Image (tube, rainbow over all chains, first blue to last red; front, side):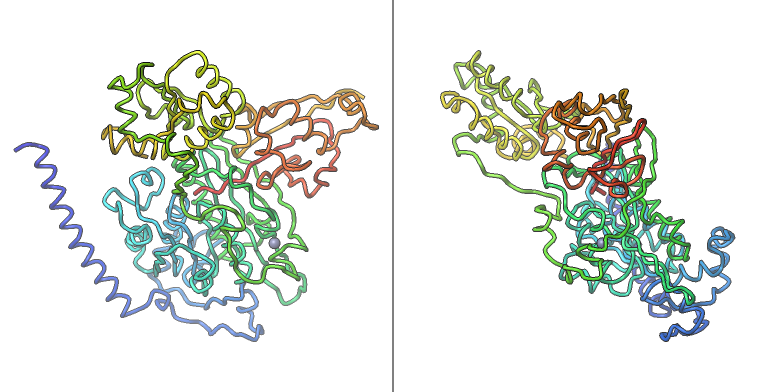
Length: 480
Length: 108
Ligand SMILES: [Zn+2]
């Protein structure tokens, strides 16, 4: 038998078995859920008092009050390795078991964070993500497997979390978090982990957490760098103190969003898998510490952790205190409801797939036509010069044979002059290309505005960039 | 007054605007030697940002500077503390200070 056929047959059989297994597992979870909801595995020791008179309720850190429960023996065995720690202990574990944590973003940060929270026995984990699993996610999004491609990230992650711990409740929200649905989704959670990948979501989550009076553990990662801090923290009020420590919120530290052109993304600039792994893992650690009522001096509150994986340095820096004039967390806030964060940040919360159209039609050619220009000698002036405006790293990864590199990021006066010289000294057409056909248009636009009109009809842009090249011309060209 | 030695650090991607060099030591002359119209010798971060723009920033200064300060999304740290804790632009540089410009990240 042809080994390729055998592989295909095995893959098919395995997929069928998996489907069957998944159905049975879902049924099991459903039945288990009917018998006992995870949080109710635990017997109440006492009802949380709302008057604030009992010892237990005054030690509660937040206004969303957690039940006080007695751990059954299976739980003591299961979580014994962390219960042994004096920092956690039986009481800390009991708190974890009735805590609800919302993880927003189930990618490079959210996967490891959620794994450790599930392992630690956090009673309810909510997962929010609108996206589906893509092959390019797998180097860092460790809850997703090859077989999960194209299925929803929250379902893929929930599946694995339930296998790690069937004694917790996992709730999935397969939506894009926005100002309309955020409050309803986050209601009842004790803590939010910001594992998102964009700036509007970061401001949205900050304001949401300030309104709900719960802290936000905010992680981020790009390339070889990671950052982490806890925003909007409020120390528990104790009976004998009137002073309540409050840490800064995200807006206290970053009142204005960065200009959109300065914002990087993992898909455009890359990320080393273990970097979000480290930051997400630290988010889980801070979450466990917070939920077990460890004091704010020991939490990353009012401090920012800066991880540089290239030099392997970690800096812990002191942030400014809470801003008494903060737009959202001060006594007289100017923001009292969730707003339009995409407008505020002038950028989209989803991975941008914008399609620019800023060139005259004549200046735009298809990938098929570029291929003809390169191979069929269409012009008496010889084949065109192809200039690739993606980053150096992307150019090294894959390129059209014979193309030259001139990254758009660095495309300034010097590069303009180089192209001008090329136009003057030679008669070839010059074709600009990028990944999706947006940056190349920006560069050609810059040139049309900058070089003599007589050269304009020798400048071209490839519609849809290398993605279209892969579709129309070279099926072996990697799409990324 | 002799030259002021400053450890200048860039991180979080801000180094891309400065030849990808994350760490360097710079020496600053007395302020009135650098800005002939200055009436004092001491540097504050306000003048230091201008010095950085003049001496280190190659192009696209809008990715680093806005007005007379750094753009939103760049955090300035003076000896590992948020510069707001020590006077922001008016902080007077001391010999051997470590000044870091860190770009905030949003990926995940
Ligand atoms: Zn604030």
